[in-house]
Length: 268
Ligand SMILES: [Zn+2]
View 1 (spheres, protein in one colour):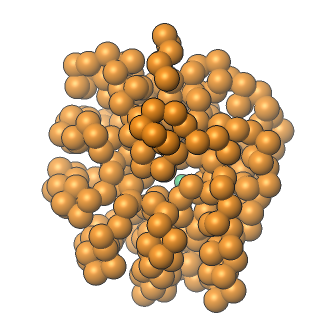
View 2 (cartoon, helix red, strand yellow):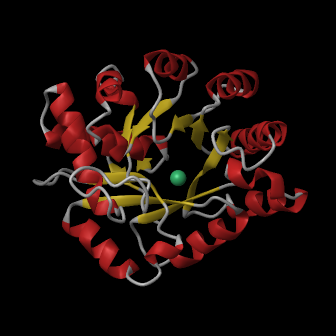
């Protein structure tokens, strides 16, 4: 289905966060007005994952991604995995995440983070769900876990690594998603790296409510601003913004298995 104006897929937002309690309807309306046709709402614990499913059950454009973030790995219980497994069977849940490793904050012990990450990869593989991956200052361990557990259909969300890490991610089959960080003045190296991502592996996101792109820095981020990420990538690559919108939306629909018969889309 083609439309005249570009259609976007924000592949990573935390609309279930407290920052959106007061005005979620307005936020979603503004996204619609900007052509943001799909949004992936991301959980970081069993609790927020359940909240995501419940909050957006009546919104046909918002799908949920559920999982235990590395920050919460230390609190994960065995029963959480049974819960996740049940929730992953719901039609509105299209991915497992966000999961991964965060050695920058290290809110959970590194070994625990590794174990919880590996366990969730195994769960996703068993259920045939793609994985949304968070990585901060843990590149080597992340790659070796995926190599050990893989191959896995995953995306390196909010990519901010260097060219070497990009190559490693692509080598292990990951897709690459860019957030508003790419628009920041100082992100010259990241923009350079982004120009090397194969177009068929490219996704875009906001990571709302964090990381507002230029020219909205300092404000709460929201899915409508994903157009700025597309604009920036289009500039770097010397193509039109429409082309980036179209490509990343098509990519997201196939990544999350929302395509049917190659052209029409599964509805929630
Ligand atoms: Zn996130």
